[in-house]
Length: 399
Image (tube, rainbow, N blue to C red; front, top):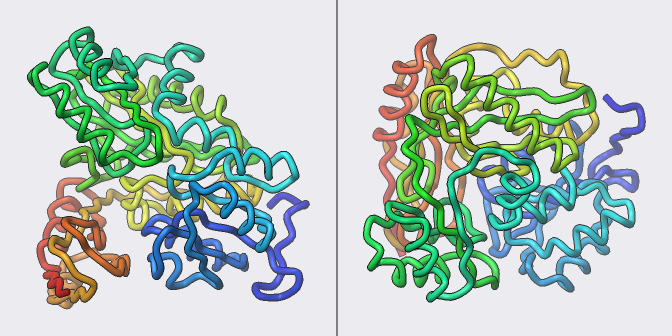
């Protein structure tokens, strides 16, 4: 560990505070790992009783896009580490407090660029020269229609700021461009009515390459394969089989983009792969939802890696382990604040399996409420068992 990193006593005068901006299921696992190492965790989100809030030392409910509210909270808590878990944050505040000496993880620049697809795509494609799909940006419905004409169909329209596939539209007909704009803008995060129109790449599969920047260099986890529905993660597995050349190219792309963003921590680099060809898609400067699989597939999960990296630990000799793993999202559908989970004993009877219930306090429509996990010597068996676990969990939602 970095000799300059001293961890005090939680809730004591010398406590080492980590302020978690965003308190969903990924933030909850980060909070757990931070608390295991003796950090005092303060969880923040836009709604009460978010998953990480349920275990944190303290919690606050604020609009993190409101710069004044966020600055007041940071001044109140005086955190040693600011750890964003979501995109919708007033990033100018992070830039300001970083200049004053607060450790924004991984960096304020990384958070600022990656919260907006326009910033990160321009960095990747135009500054770093990384291979990407063809793309155009649009700030009005008319510009979106014109961009779809230029890019051609099939294509994908996404809000420049969103998460979990919200607002993402797959277009097969140019005539649907106007309605795609409306959906993307209405479901995107932030106040910026702007979209990216991406040409569709005929890829074999998509991977997440968890890339860990730490005091000793850069560490790559084994590639994670995953499936999505409407742009949202549903299933992931590790490792994803791919050619040696494609893996090398993936690592080179991931190292290039994360080196440019800087800082220490886990980056979820998303890539399209076809044969030996690789294209950059997106990057998040934090643990990734598809990386939930690392809770069973690695000895040190992505969440533990993130916390250790930001603390200044040299991870060069870390042993990740080599077992295969799979994760499947456990979904709830309906509307209500009374959520019951049944048949858990059946779920836990599946060999080499586990699951996490996130503890989300409310469902409106469809929401990810947990994750099924399984490990095995073969990826196929792990995926089968993870799906069995997910299918075994019955969810009842009442008003």
